[in-house]
Image (cartoon, rainbow, N blue to C red; front, side, top):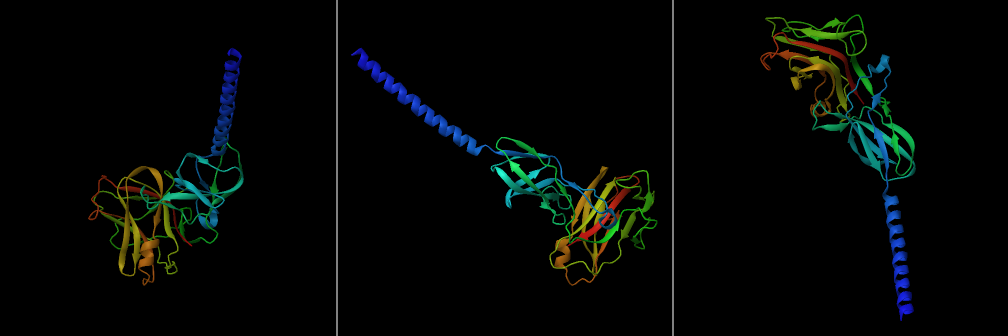
Length: 290
């Protein structure tokens, strides 16, 4: 009887051990199958041809990541994220921005080409990627003002109390930047670009980029044939900031207009001055479209 019970117990425990090994093996295989590779991206940099595309300053906030042309996700930078693939893949990283400087209107910046890189994904490993993007090959720059040339390319409305001056004491990039200062008694400033007649009206992206620093709300917008059609208020900042202003929608909706002019201004009637002597600094202005 004792021998019979012992054999029974041995069979039971043997079966228990075999089942445990099988279940453990299945769990391990399942775990290993789901173990991702991690991708780490701190920032996305920009390279430009300075002579034809202007400065490489940027304000890229997000990475739009594709693996083998499948969207993995949109990630605020810096970011580390999982990819449930392994082996050789093609990764594309597109630059994401805040349209018009607004956090709730994040968008892929269509005027930059993506960073493309071949990666070998290994489960459990973290791969550091340093994306660098360039302007799209078809990008057109009707206007670049970096304040480095002897003369400036601005026009002024007749009511403007002052103009944009070159200065070298507070510069975002290069040797010079632009400065506007309103002394006591001055209450209006407005500068414009020349009129552009070849801006596309077919929905292709059109942006105005600039670096700025200001102690007073600043108005940026466009003039069409019928007058001011759009303006955006840039808030005060004590540090240089880059903004991408999306002109695509307004220009496309007013396709009958024959010309477009960019304007930059202060207007005490529209926005009462909060600073005793309003002062703005500008650099790296560029109008760009596809």
